[in-house]
Amino acid sequence: MAWVLPPRTFYPSSYPKVLVLLSPEYAEELFGLIQVGVNQQELLKKAQGELLPLYQQLFVPLGIPRETLAQRIMDEVAALYERYNALCESEYDRFEKNIKKELERMAKERNYPSGLDYYRHFRPQYYIRGLMTPPNKIWVVLNAIKPYTFLPRLDRQQQPIKSTGLTISEGVAKVMVEKLKRAEEIIRSKGWEDEIRQQVHSIIGFQPREMAGAKNIPGQLPKMSYHALGQAIDIDARDNPQLIGPLATAIDNILDWLDAQKQQQPPEGGQQTPGEKKSEPIRIHQFIQTFKKSKIEALKQLETDDKEAGETLLLDAAQKLRTGMEQIEQAIQGFINAWLEQWQASGGKAKEDDKERQTTQQAFDLLYQFLLARGVIPRDKKTGKGKLVKGDAGKIVLTPEQVEKAKHFPVISLPATLIVALVEAGLRSGLEYRESKDVMHFESL
Image (cartoon, rainbow, N blue to C red; front, top):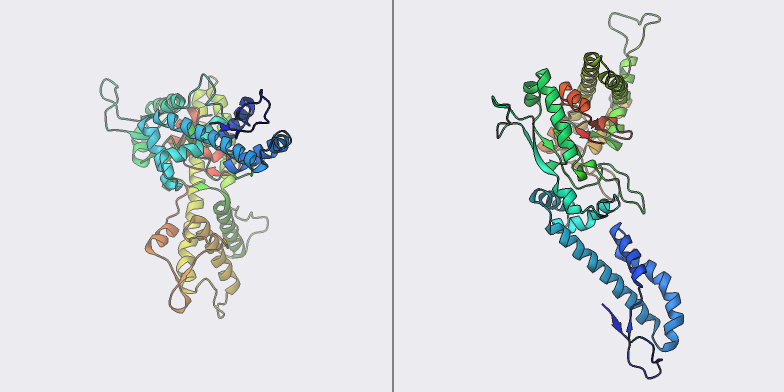
């Protein structure tokens, strides 16, 4: 794409009749910025800011207006984006069906016109991780992510029986297949198959997206999820939610309040005995820290001759983790059941004649923050406040779906035996994340 100079008799005979303002080296520099996600407006601002002062000195005295030079730079930058779009389309055409299906699903979820449009948006995540650098080709890397069936039943020849097991239709990478097979060996050697099959219902693999809850830092891409490389799975996502940000804070605040209420109540049978310990508050991070310490020690033992002791320690740690998480689930569920209907009936405000008005209002406020963080109550994008629907006498109206979502708040459903098998096979649990606790998530480092 080249712009032809207008005919003028006073041009030197050696002056080119075709003007390209972006040198090949500079054009490649800009194209590299496009590939890491710089948008067209920002790139044009950079190019014009760096080139126009120089080209004005060169060409304006020859009769070429500054506006013409600015337009020419704009055209050449637009041509670079056309080149990028063509490259994305060429790569997208090479993807296998399962990869395209997930790109199309993400496009629909994120309101992009098509899977190709979403890939064009997400491609910088792969580029900055070197997946476009020879000899790597993005379609080769992603097409290696294949559907996999976890823990199928075996026939007498120890061959997988079709239509049994948990199919990861989105696919996982080869490194995940190897570790999942190792987990299957552990599960079968311990006789845990039936327990796990009864309690686990779905596993999700490849998802081309950022890490859930990743912070948006200006000038930086959000952190990419291991799912985008097929190196992570989510197990029964609905019953093992990610505890992060406002939701984690809301849970902690409710647990703090419940513990404070419990401390104020006299023990059964009279006064507290001097020196008697008060009940310890339940906290998610306490169970997880205990699990992580036990896991490290167990994995050390698994590398020695005392393998049985290591397996016992790891299973015990996983069982304690699940028990602790179930205690939290029960505490939150009991709080919701105790206060939800009263909160609705009162319009979220404690009544003037309520003898425990302060306590009631505290519970109402905590419940509101939990429902907001849980997504039961929609949030106003401008104010950040919840959109409450009120009916007769100021009562808060919730749909049956909202009530069901409010009352059904599972924290963990994974069997301890599955956690043990996956960890022993070399996968990291999302519970070990520093800033969030992702119960469903396991990844290959």
